[in-house]
Image 1: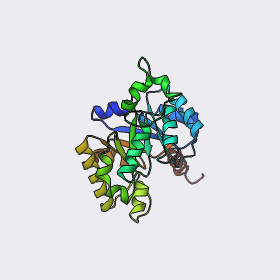
Image 2 (image 1 turned 90 degrees about the vertical axis):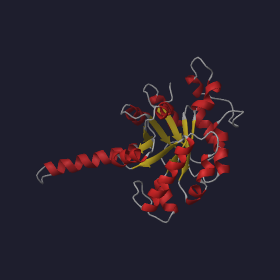
Image 3 (image 1 turned 180 degrees about the horizontal axis):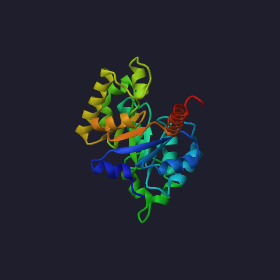
Image 4 (image 1 turned 90 degrees about the horizontal axis):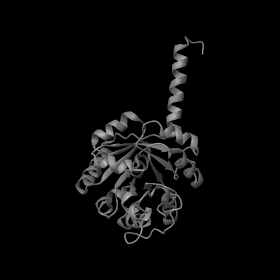
Length: 258
């Protein structure tokens, strides 16, 4: 299976990313048919675990979406394990320094580029005619999250680490770090200025910036700003938004009976 994220980036296009908080293969299967380019299983803040991640990957396998994972932390054991399970991209939270970025890349890459242990128990299914180990370093994407004041301070050093394909902004934690209310779709001038800086520095290096958004309107705006990976809320959030809208529309059209 081709890495749609890499392909769309190479074509100069943006990636529309789905996000799975619900530990359900069925939910993943539904999301994989909704037009997303990639779908990310959230092991940090979702209620997923490793086995539910694998079930989600299996459910999505019949559909042309690139499976990715947000790991709980910058720890080599879980990073290697999600890659062995079939992740094509790893989003890693709270990467704040060059040293932490280097450790993240090292955990993602096989020697000589890194220290990832060999054992792609499920990922090897995708090796096709070429062995997985020969293509993994080039195909798997390392995407650290920029979501703290410290990370912004060290931004250029983080971006200069070889092997990073892009960065991913966590707006809630980023705002929190600057003393603001945690939320997704930010409008504060000081935060938008940080976004501009991240986009500019990524552009200089030919790498790509992603961001988590609360929905389609801000996601489209983010693409216009220069972001090349946008996440639309998550599966549970989208379900809640659709359900609330349907209930509200029903009550509105019921002439006060409902």
